[in-house]
Length: 291
Ligand code: SF4
Ligand code: SF4
Image 1 (cartoon, rainbow, N blue to C red):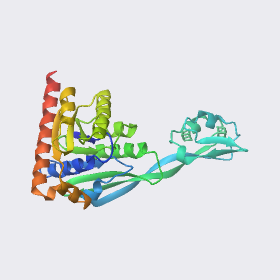
Image 2 (spheres, protein in one colour):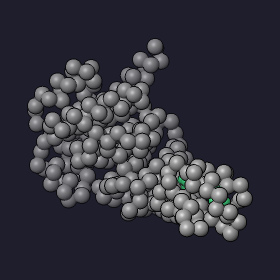
Image 3 (cartoon, rainbow, N blue to C red):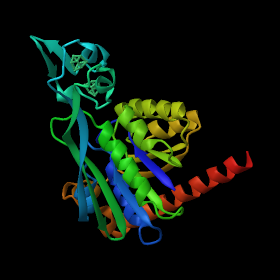
Image 4 (tube, protein in one colour):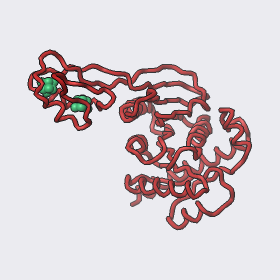
């Protein structure tokens, strides 16, 4: 069972939900938490896993050799403007290069060599039975895609059994990174908060899920008892999977970088939420098989 935890914007409690759900399932199911929010991964702050391995994610970029005739074909072919023929040389801008290899293919004289630069890293660890994976994009880098692709690849390698639970903590927003980290999930959990901004961003996330054809439900964080999110879900026929109350104790635990599972009240809340989610996934599977 793969669950994608998403939010239309940052700061809604997406990671709180993802981390605590993973911890609540771990005693009963093989559970893996994967932090795809590579620009700002903070799940490990709360999980504090024992790191077992780290690997660097590299991206290739071109290095022009002496065979170059300055024909300009490579710079014309590069859709990312990472090459320019200027002043009798080919300038390479590695930070713009997406590593697509087109320049090497179009060069008529084999003047494009490939070198690599480090883009980020992937860490693997374990905490209380939760396998933990995270991608970290290097500071100053903007290309999250290759790190996310590598992480997806590693996630697939880690899945040992079909009944395993994968909790994918996706980046906020609605970018390509969100799509790549959420696709092929059994259910997307859209985490929102009961404010007009929260509702606005929830609507964007809902639109994205519908375009992707992904099953989804909503989890309301900082629930103040208001009707804003409930009414929207009812109007749109969206399942409200559960709510986490607005509570200062949660904020205090969060600010200390701790998980909520140490407090029985919150541990029970996440256990119930987890059971509700498993029921929902099974229900949707049964409906899908019948259809
Ligand atoms: S590898 Fe692709 S993106 Fe990079 S410089 Fe060559 S054509 Fe441009
Ligand atoms: S296509 Fe090859 S030969 Fe032409 S400018 Fe680029 S590197 Fe030089």
